[in-house]
Length: 222
Image 1 (cartoon, rainbow, N blue to C red):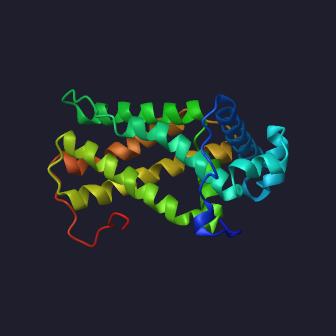
Image 2: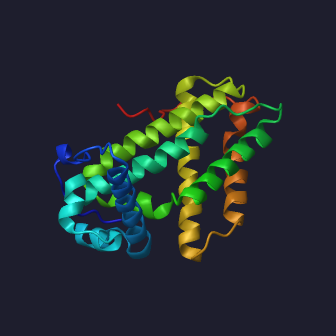
Image 3: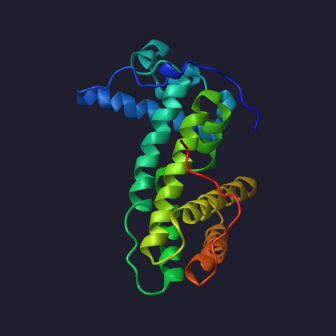
């Protein structure tokens, strides 16, 4: 996707963290409005006037809390990620059947994504703005590291660097489900079935005696 828009790296933070309930509600309303505009109209239409109008507030009121649209997207992204991360990092209860264990874990993650509205539109927004690129890369690396730890805890004997490389690729398989749903115009359930089948086939060598790759591997973000 073509990228547009620039902002200063130092202008990505929320201006102030409200301590009163009214202020916290204002933040929640602005983030909800950001998500609605994003899902309905796409990242190119995401402007501070559009967000303010959707939230029913003035642009000045929006700027009281956020310096620009990128800071709103980042706040929304990190809010959603916190909820997803809680599932990704919760230890999988091993039953002795790693395929069933990973399959159930993946289905729980996809169910949580659907519950909180985390999906393709938000990831497209992160890709759309160059100033958010480093944040996206750090998230991808952190998620892959968490997935690799799950694989290790389930008994994979592969070394950490090989598990990270494998986990990163498995993480990106999730994008295929979002792209499929975007094309179909609805969240057809077979996408999750195929994600589980593809992911378990991908990681099978790490659990069933396959040798780890010896070629150059992807590394965690520095």
